[in-house]
Amino acid sequence: MVDTTPLTRAVDHFADRLRAAPQSRLQRGAAAEALALARELAVWTQRLEEPGTEPREMPDAGMFAAADQITVAGRDLALVLENEEEVAEALQLVEEAQKRAGV
Image (cartoon, rainbow, N blue to C red; front, side, top):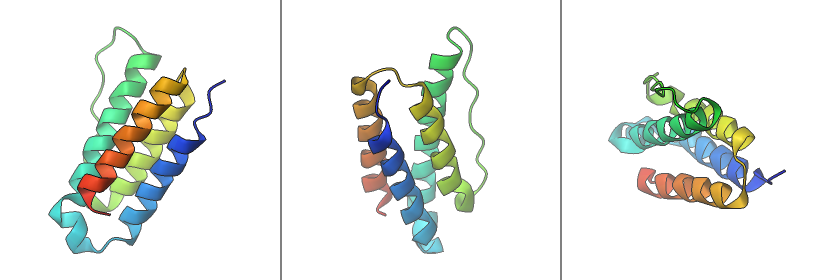
């Protein structure tokens, strides 16, 4: 079994930073960056769980839901990753998105 703890910690940290961010920061792109990450992680999960099917897009639930969306998508992905390389790749995606979000 692969250790996904670093990924879930990074996702939780990003989500916590979003929840603490002022509305102006969310409006300037942090929420959009989080949604883009959540969508990317959700598609990755769907491809692993349902190969050969067309992935569904995570809806935009608004800027105040972005933190919850990355939490759900990140934790769902952590459950299906199969090796350390995938965990490292997912972790890098989360860290890069958080930097771009500025939180």
